[in-house]
Each structure stands twice: as C-alpha cells, then as structure tokens.
Image (cartoon, rainbow, N blue to C red):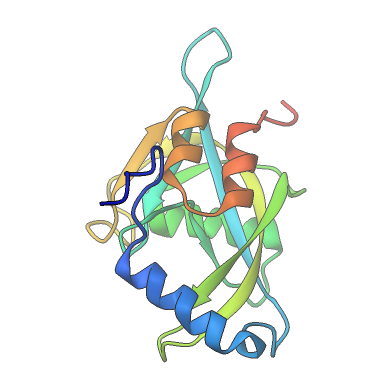
Length: 171
C-alpha cells in the first residue's frame, strides 16, 4: 500500500477528465485567441481597523467558488460591465474603480463542452449596497470572507494571488 501524500487534495473527476482531454489534444487549447472577460473584486471594510472582506460566489454550473465576471457588453466600458456582473450575480452595488487591479487567466467551458482560454480583467468595487432581489438570486451562494479565505476557495492560481495580496486602491 502506498503512503498517503500529505496536504494534497484529491483531483475531482471532472478536472481529471479535463486535464486528460487537454493532454491528448493540446493544440485545441491555443487554437484560438484568448477571450476577454471582466470581473468584479467586490470588497467591504470590516470595521474601523481597515480590515476587509472579499465577496466570493459560486458558479451556477459547477458550484465552485469564483468572483462575479462576464463577457464584454456592447456600449459598456469594461469597468461598467464588471459592475453590472456584480449586480446581476450577487446584488452588489458600489464604487467601481475604472482601472483594473489585476488580471488572471482560466479555461472556460462553453455550452458545447469545448474549452476556451479567457483573460479576466478584475475591477475593484467597494460595496455600498447589497440587495436580496438580484437577477441570479437562488442560483448562487454568496459569502463575504477574508482575503486569505477567498484565495483558499478559488481554484485559479493567478486569482488566488490577486485576492490574498489585494489592497484597495484610491479612496
């Protein structure tokens, strides 16, 4: 019997399947350009000490922890699209910064089962209002957690780094 490796999580069947699929056909991964998305790094101040909480939500399909994000919107600037995603996916409105605080990459599974590489520009939103009556209510879980906990929950390595190192910009 092999000894158990400490500190390693078991790979989910779906991610194991994805990795096997990509290993067999790596040319599919980069056969097209990266697609752009815009995401919202929503935060709130915990108290007078300057500590913050970050919003994480679950995806509708797999239930994994993510931040609100979506595709570009016709007639909207990237920071406006990020703010709309925060509202539709989590009921959060606030002060959005027009300059991204970072970007990360991930593989997006499309409805046809294909995967496309995406680059997500992340815009900070300081929460001013949270409403219970938002478009995707009941389709996602929401949680306000410390930056360390937010980083622990998400899967994307670059996003983990952005969350754990996040310091609100501007006032």
